[in-house]
Amino acid sequence: VQLQASGGGLVQAGDSLRLSCAASGRSIRTYAMGWFRQAPGKEREFVAAISRTGGGTYYADSVKGRFTMSKDNAKNTAYLQMNSLKPEDTAVYYCAADSRIITSSLSGAVNYDYWGQGTQVTVSS
Image (spheres, rainbow, N blue to C red):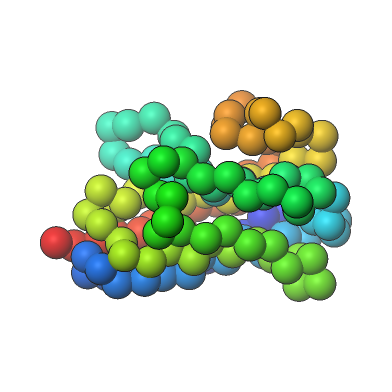
């Protein structure tokens, strides 16, 4: 599976952005999808994920209530709708996919086999 993340940009605090993660090579219908982010000088951190069955969506506490992750199997694309953006959301955002990951492991970056190239999100105050 090849993943292409897009949709990042420079916005002001309180604005919204929608990130897309377009997959090619295989259908992501049975893949778990995740979004992670990495700010300068910090480790990559979990943002959101959808389970393999699509029956569960999970969020980091820092984005809960502001971010919404979805997956469109027909378009082979996952999305991350980000509302009420804050300066601390500034980071490179990466999407990831895996066909075998279990729900309890969704927040662990090491558990994903496939990664996109990242898209920069910058939120100014």
